[in-house]
Each structure stands twice: as structure tokens, then as C-alpha cells.
Amino acid sequence: MPSDEASDVSDQKYAGTRGGFADAVRMAGRACVYALLGGSALLTIVTVAGVLGPMLALDLYTPPVAAWWTVFTAVVVQGVPFLLLGALVSAAVGALVPERVFTRLLPRSPALAVPLAGVAGAVLPGCECASVPVAGSLMRRGVAPAAALAFLLSAPAINPVVLVATSLAFPGHPMMVVARMVASLATAVAMGWLWARFGRTEWLRLPARPSTGSGTSRAGAFVAGLQHDFLHAGGFLVLGAGAAATFNIAVPRALLDTFTASAWVSVLILALLAVVLCVCSEADAFVAASLSAFGPVAQLAFMVVGPMVDLKLFALQAGTFGREFALRFSSVTWVAAVAGSVLVGGWLL
Image 1 (tube, rainbow, N blue to C red):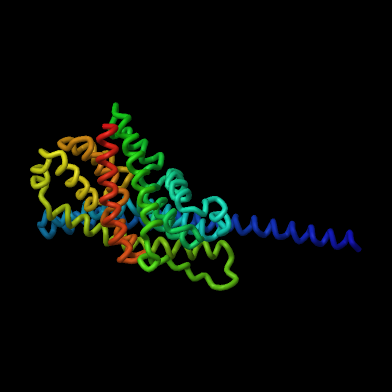
Image 2: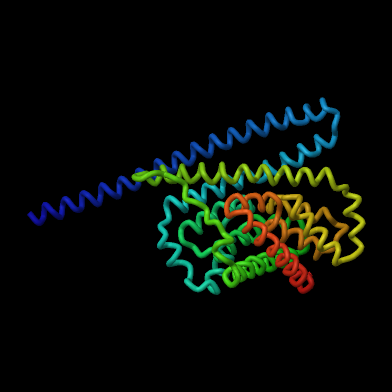
């Protein structure tokens, strides 16, 4: 009898293991199908928009409309793939990773958890569109908001893809890559510590868990989380892209060129320009390098501020964490990013 009972227990364990593996295979298959369908839909939309948009602008005989459409489409097309990446990571974290994993990996003290989370941002090869849903998922899984916010700011700024792109945009200037990494990481950690010290719970609206119902499998939870994060954040991405496109056609470039004479003013101008242009962090280094009339410190400020504070990111944060949080956090982050760029740029550049 004891041997029969042991055999039954082993059979149950084997069945449970096989069932878990089958769930993982089904979930991976569904993720691939959703990614393929989403990519196909995105390609179709971009193709139709690329054809009909310029035709409509030409029919209306309004070159500003064509310019607005070009900027709007570029921002959305840049952001959507990385937003999908962030939604995939966020859904995977919510469905697969137990809460105890984060409590064990991160120290309880915010003074230690914040820099560790900031350094961990280097592993996510995405832009700011991807970091918002991931940070929201981390908060839902029990990670301290200060650590999650440090990750949110550092992930789009210090990941390997961004640093390689920066080295290609500034050939022969390796210190620009070092300065960007140091200034971005320092700003992210500083903001995490500031939130841990001065942040209030009522300022931050924690993102709600996607409703999956009782008894939902991991595959169902993954799909529900993916749909919730992608559709919810995608709408705010579109709003931010529209605001950026409007600025591009409303402010003449000649007005910006008049401020390049002063080093301090040029830093502030490019820091503000980074907010409204909404260039993806993987491409902003090439935009900064093209602004050759400005000094290296101003170019650094453009690359540090952009991935942390821009119009589409503000819209994403407002939709995920609340408008009051986005106003406070974005304004302080902008000041910290500019100060970090000036200090690190003056030291290394």
C-alpha cells in the first residue's frame, strides 16, 4: 500500500509538470499569433496611411497638413513596436513571475533597491513607450514605487541598443556615450530616491490589474494583460504624437536657431525641444548629432531629457498613474535631467 501511494503521488507530480509545460507551450503559441496579427495589422495601417495621408494632404493643398501627418506617423510608427514589446514583457511578468520573486531580488531598503532597479533598466531593449507598462506591472507585483520609477526612467536611456546607436551617431566621441549613460542613470536613481523621500501615496494611482476572472489559466492571464496594457497605453501614445506633430508645424525652426549663441540658453532650448519632438530613444542620438549648431552639453541634454520627459511619455504616465502624478513627476524629472546633463557634460565633455 505505501508503494501504491508513493506511485500515485509521483504520477500526480508528473501530470502537474506536464500540464504546466503544456500551458507554457500554449501561451507561447498564442503570444506568437498575437504578435503576428498585431504586426500585420500595424503594417496594413502604416501602408494605407502612408498612401492616403499624402494624397489627402495634396488634395487639400495644405503643405502644413502633410508635414503634420509625416511627423505624427513617424512618432506613432516608432513607438508602437516598442509599446508592444513593453506590453508583452508586462503581461509575461504579471502572468508568470510570482510576487515573492521581486521581494527576494530587491532589497527592502529603498536606498539600495532604487540603484539596483536603475541598473536593471539596461536589460530592456526598448524605448520609453515600453517602460511605462512594465513599471506598472512591477508595481502591481509588489515592487516599491520608487524602484519601479527608477527602472521606468533608466530602461529607455541606458539599454545596449541606445548606447550603440549613440556611438554610431557620434563616431570618434566615446565620451558622449559615457556621458549619456552616467547622466541618465544618475537622474533615474536621483528621482527614485526623491520619490522614496518625498513622494506621497495619494499622488500615485496604482494601475489596476486586468480582470481575468477566477480560475483563469496563465495563458488567459497573459492574453488579458497584453490586451489591457497595449490598448490602454496605445491611445495615449496617439495623443502625445498628435501634440508633437502640432508643435513641429507651429514653431518655425528659424526661431530656434537664434538661441544657439548662449551655451546656457541652448541647453534649455534643446531640453525643451526633446520634450515636444518625442523622438524614440533608439533614434534621438542621430537627431541630436544633426543639431550641430548646438554645443555637446546641449546635445547631451537633448538625449538625456527625451527618454525621460516628452509629450507621449507624459500622456502614457497620465493614463497609467494619474494626471497629478504625471505633472509632478515629469516636471521634477525635467529639472533633474537638465541638471545632470550640465554637471556630467561639463565634467566629461
